[in-house]
Image 1 (cartoon, helix red, strand yellow):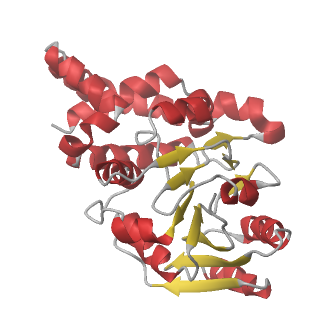
Image 2 (tube, one colour):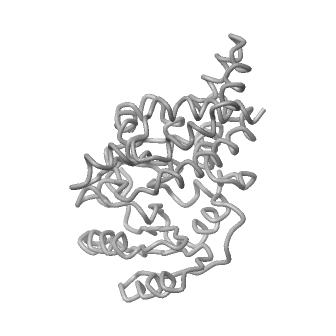
Length: 302
């Protein structure tokens, strides 16, 4: 068993408030005897002056650094830069908008029996708190993530470790991303983590999955979620030949095409796509309509 005695906790931000997450990881790190650690709040060129000041003030925590960089051309480039500033041998990346679920979150990673050259993923879940029933009815992102929660279980992720790889929170030796970096060809939103999972598999890097989720607790509007989804689908379309084995949507598109039904889906989206999008942006979105919309939008890309 490898003894992890030093850790760089890397938190990427862009106009995000990292204070709650920093406080949580700081308290846990302080409680681990003998752990040398740093918390790096990596600001990818934020434009909100109030957020910049708030996140800079987090340096009041011992071992916390606020690093401000020029805005990167893409999320992949930002994460590569962020990983390069970590001082210690072991790194943990956590998205700033997520919430720790377990009080022993850091210990679960440190005690995960990971070896240098391997990666550990903890998974994600969703938590709507007192508003969960309302969110399920009205918020598309919450409803989708809640529906997908069973696929994020440790058992399911372990069955397909590379396909299930996500970078919302993951733990690795610093040499891993020095060897297999994020693919900076992906300029648009989405799929940079899926591509990294593929590259890790190709490089023979073992990916382990454990029960150590972080929780989504804030959710964008339906309209904003659809904008991000559409951008991600355009990214997927650009890299489809490389990601065919890593995307359920691409597999569905392939089946429709083999059945000569893709043209019909394209036509339906052209006729009804705007109306369906308006329905999904409303206060009572339906998941099965979202699935149809995603297929139609992708098919319309040509």
